[in-house]
Image (tube, rainbow, N blue to C red; front, side):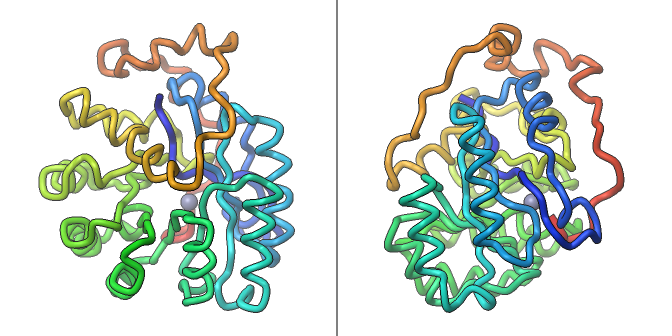
Length: 288
Ligand SMILES: [Zn+2]
């Protein structure tokens, strides 16, 4: 099963760019299905009210119960007074499976970590190249799972990537996702140094194309078992403590066409339609 651990869905209210305005999951899922991706972890775009955004996201997840896995977004500073309530509702009412925090909102605090611990939720935290936060979090909460998107930052910062690879080696509870990492050689280095069990395939859709992001992993030409860890095995293992996946995958019509999904794109070739993107505009650096 191929699982994308990083995608956005739903509407925002900032209107500075797509990252806080709208992420169209229907368009993204068309591309994901064509790429053979079975499941996609989704969280909101930037919002001024994540409780409301999570509720909107829950409706989207319910519309695609066999394809989407919801992560709730929280702004640790702004939501400090209600984080317990937000996490409880996200998990108990809406079946969310993890938390998403973006350092451009604020950084995780103890209240957020305690709430995650209560429900054994993994935390996907964009540290926006401030990798020292990973040291603090992983050290204080060795029993929590931390996923660092973009290998530490969306802004092609080589030194940040190297620092996070080092953290992957030193902290058993720290993982990184591959979304938006432009320096492909760094991904190869990460696997070699930290191991395939520490990397998670993510697309950062809908702005980034899931087929392109998946192809980066396939180009590593790893042994099939290692590639399978990165493209789904790891995130499924990390989600396991909070319970089994809510719905088994359904083999629908699109699946017939995309069953090739289990074979690497390298061997089946990439069709031009898989690479078409309706997204417009470049993502703000460090923003997604
Ligand atoms: Zn993102």
